[in-house]
Image (cartoon, rainbow, N blue to C red; front, side, top):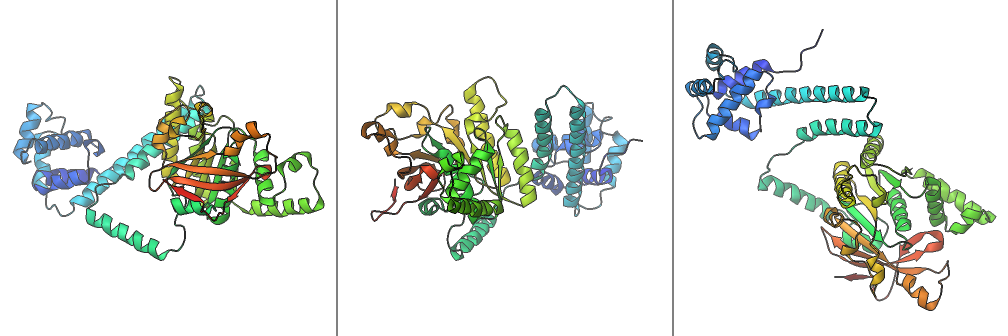
Amino acid sequence: MARELPNAQTLEQALLGSLMIYPTVMQECMDMDLQPGEFYLPGHQRLFECMQQIQKSGQRIDLNLVITRLQDKEELDAAGGLDYIIRLADSAVSSANTRHYIESIKNTSQLRQLIFAAERISSESYDLGEDIDTVLDQAEREIMDVTRYRRGTEFESSQSIVNRVMEQLVELRNQKGVTGIRTGYTELDHITNGFQRGDLIILAARPAMGKSALALNFANEVAKLNEGAVAIFSLEMPADSLMKRLLSSESQVPANKLRDGKLTDAEMSRLNFSGSQLGERNIFIDDTSSIKVSQIFSKCRKLKTEYDKLSLVVIDYLQLITGTRSDSRQQEVSDISRNLKILAKELDCPVIALSQLARKVEERNDHEPQLSDLRESGSIEQDADIVMFIYREDYYKKDQEGEQKQDDPSIVDLSLAKHRNGSTGKIKLVFEKNISRFTNFSSQNGDIYEN
């Protein structure tokens, strides 16, 4: 036997009756954004819609006007009939419980929407012709649409916002050090105050500049210095190769020795110690080569559920993510970058997405990256809260001065070309390529040059 859907018919009747007697009730309905479709009975939906139209026309809602309007539109019977509407008005006692009535009507409406979404998910799951990723993505979207409506916000008064902001400022004033996600890089934390939750951070460079190594360094430092899990999505490099880089950076054992196995006892001891430390950090690597944004969403949600919070998500790299549109690659990349920003906001954590730069960088004399060099989509710049470029001057000088030794450190410029909530500038870091490690740069002349 079919079960009746959740509803609040009695409260719907009480509210509709009050609307025809007490003028202030419709304002309460408008304030709480009550819609005709949230009523359970079709007749109640028509009746409330009629009252909304009367309100919009500037007239006062009353019993006679409602009946006349329904008769003119030949909807009187569909709304329950003359006798039913009169009984509704006669039963109205007070407007004191209006807010409770509206909340109950909206709550039961949302429960019905959740049931309908579950039924659609069930039906789509039986369709064997659908790709599993498409089904899972649609299922998550169905549920998210219901919950997103639930979490919708209304206007806030300036007074309540000021009070909240002032409380935050007092807390920040009393808090020492970085307030965001600490990166371990002193001057970067100084400019950004740490990576902020909800930010999309683009880290871009030409090949061989060390962007993957820097992203791994960020992940390792964030996991070391902050609570929560760190997720790394490597679309180009296997998980084992990433871990070898992390081990090399942490132990300072050259990466080539991890490849050929020519290790001394002291180096093996350092690797064992570093491996133990890395194993204790909440770093999780996914090396699916053709992952979709929907899969990234799903895996990050599960990780956040298990570890309560995410402190960082790293994606290497943006252009390798499989999109859902085929009309143009530029539009596809635009959709991907927009969804990554949504991911950062929904999961309340910073998301670092690595990006390629166009070849035109190589054609300029100075070779320093610019925002216009971001490959395939200007929307990457638009969606990002921070855009950082890596530039190694020694890389371009080696053609003139000969090959640089593999174990020679490089001075690298990390340029903040865009910073939505702060200043831009250049930070100098030291890159030890043989161990895939970036470290802070110290100089008597200072290591930051603000724009």
